Image (cartoon, chains in turn red, cyan):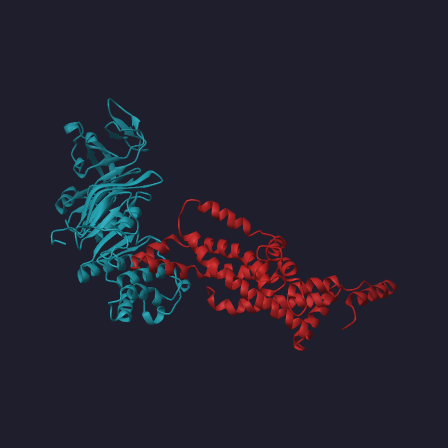
Length: 253
Length: 342
């Protein structure tokens, strides 16, 4: 398995040209699939380091973005104030921020000559987490606000009719919109764990330190190690799957 | 609250959405422990008025006195004492049991909330053992409405406001809602206001029925309403063509799409020819429905001529003397000049 898949495929291509049979493209995926199992079962330290970095950095950024984004999004959707529409427009636009742009901005702020250079967190996981928080925050705010705005108008009537005061009305409404907020969180988590731009630019893809699963995929692909890249991709999907399963108890049915 | 104070006294109530007036009620009183109906077509302002009475929304102008005092949404005098069941009942995303307990637990002084909840479910005809643990999405539309009603009955409210409680409900449950309303009044002295467009059912349940149209309340619900358009007729009179019949003749309307209101005393069923006398006009119609009015014992007789429906309160003796029965064709006499315009 240590041999380069790309070379082996080239070899097979030559064979195929001789015998008149083309190489099977699914081969990449099969090899990658087997490799993923092998990496996980053998507890490959390099792979586990990348998984650990991904989980840690995404935990930081999700914690930060949810704790800021849910209250902000709820207030944005729940209350009426002048300029609300304009703020919504800005937040919705920020949802489309390119990760490389966030990476660039955070890099500029955190680099030695930047305004936050003294913190010395460039090329660290907390540095990546700052960038990923900026990535997740507009998603959490916008989708939470949408969930709250889409709440049934009869909810308010019902809660007041059952005797809820203003405070109880607020918290009961928040709890009623939990499925929408959960969807916002899962969406943001998906963006955070799969982004490359921020991790690469702010983290620097340092082996054993800031190499996440996505930056590892980018590196392996550059090296021509497609099977390794596919294996890491499958591992990333498994992480997302595990997160979704563990949150499924909160789902509607 | 003085014993003479009505439970509601509405004064100069006005409400508008985006500067478009939707409600205008100069004065209205609702007595304690009465069952009052609000009859009107869709968009007439029934639901808006119920939301004001339920202290869900605040009117743009004017005030609503509750037990003699002006109250606002969330004030302790009305919170969990006045309960509104919206037309599309909403259940919170939790079990039936927790939906009913929600309101009871907010009112902390209730000692046996579980017993109250169970009793309320029985009242609406749902078995607590069978339905209590179901989730909100495991109920049919009718069951959802009954659970929502049970959640309000459990509170034993002073005022229960029902918005179109019979819309999309089967005959057995329409009867049940009537019984529940009467029980609530008898047991807890609950005042009940019901908005509906089912005039017959309202008259069966309510002590008093108000008509509401274009945000205005008028009379006691015994007026007949006829919609335009109106066309100039003979002399100063205008008329509404009724295909297959003589036109309906009225006094000059303020505009051609005005709504005509015929007071009950302006309508008469008489077999002998009266046309020409007392300025009365005559129109032939078919008796389409006869409903016993709950308190007065009079029989509300609906006479249909094409699309025009007139309701005349008659005594039992009138019915007997005139040999009236649904399906019979009768001459309907009316005074075109007695029409009021909206």
